[in-house]
Amino acid sequence: MLSGPASGSVLGWPKILLRLEGAALTAAALFAYFGLGADWRLLAWLFLFPDLSMAFYLAGPRIGAIAYNTAHTTIIPFAVLGAGVYLGQGLMISIALIHLSHIGFDRMLGFGLKYGTAFGDTHLGRVGRPPDAAT
Image (cartoon, rainbow, N blue to C red; front, top):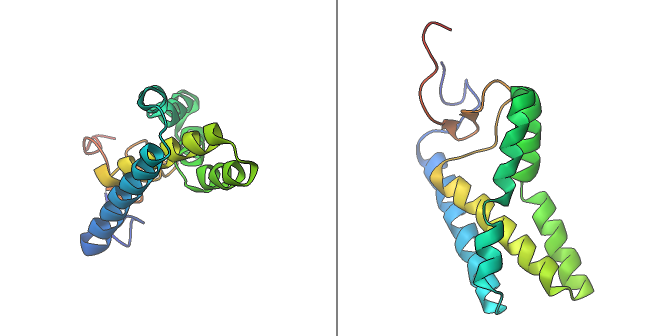
């Protein structure tokens, strides 16, 4: 399997920078979350919630990738965050910050957005075991 620009995955310093960016997103979201005085129990309950999107891989890698990427892009939580700030809804703000911290944490660990070919094919490179040479 190809890696790098020909495969659509990132290598070298750009990959390190993207992972550091994920760490910064996690830190900023958690700093804001606890700065608001939000309850750590809500964080514990919802932190892994976006990973439920992986269940869609039961319908195949294309559907799974769409669901996973929808749950792991910052667009939705930033929209919820903005709406929560505008409406003065602390719970919306808290949920959005938890979601952002999860996305940042995943990126920091090297879990990128998925391609529709296989669960392990991400924009940050292959995750998990290498593909079986026989397939």
